[in-house]
Image 1 (cartoon, rainbow, N blue to C red):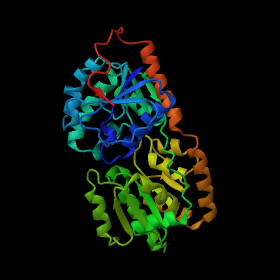
Image 2 (image 1 turned 30 degrees about the horizontal axis):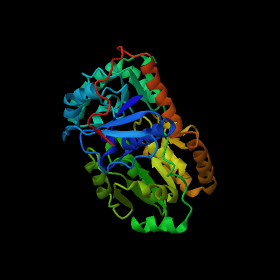
Image 3 (image 1 turned 180 degrees about the horizontal axis):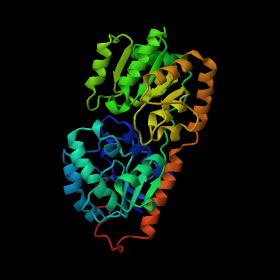
Image 4 (image 1 turned 180 degrees about the vertical axis):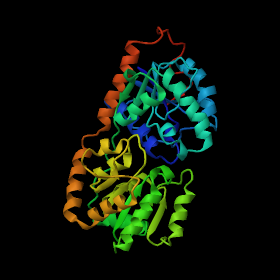
Length: 389
């Protein structure tokens, strides 16, 4: 097959969707190197990604646009007509609505529909309008949990037969770091000289960080010596979260690191007393799996996909209750037997997820579309024109 792959998520500072796009593509190239893979993006891909050596990878070097949405809807359909991939995968929610190329789109969650109050008006107007069109026109939809799949069927009205649940995994770089020198190096870099509770994700209201901060206040009143370390770049309406810390004079106890490079995350997870992820809604919750892979005990929400991902290997809490979040965190931080039990269960749970499995399942979706094409295949005018290695 000639597989097209919309690669804008590979650019810039990666978060969950970026790591998904990167690891899935690398996994497919590893397990199916006989295929040709061509990347489409609205900007130059130079230096954006260290591609694996296995597999035949090209980047279509065409006309670049600074605005992804304009490029995707106005430019990419014409590019696809020229290159004629057998299938094109869009790993980041949106796809061209006018393209006739067989398409697979990954919808990671339905947060725009389930929790619209946590998004700015531009996303609500543009993305909430486009996503239903994209979902109806796509030949297949991939999502990352059964919870998200149920939401897609419920909110978008697509048939469940069109939705394929293929769960995420984490990079092999996420494993427990036991080397004291490496742990101390990262601790020193981020100014961590004592025990800490860790959160990893975007700093935004949907992640429920105000309640996490209030739970942490309760812990400090009970004399817990830990700091709260919030790792992630600023998202929409993050100012209210920083203001909560200032309001209670907690700046010395709550550390905002900003965006943390990928290579530092395993040590941060490994050194944490517990990883707190009380998000209000997730399609998957990749930091939960990353933490488990590194042996960190996890406290997370009982809602959306998080209970599905944890599957008995984490303490589950009501995300609307700061007191319940505090109780769970206190238990893990003060009970070494409980922490060790959660750590062992988490590592075992994380081993059940691999990018190889995700890649093979995704390729099966492609195969099903190529075996039963929506339109009859025609000879390609070009296959490699204007494509460079």
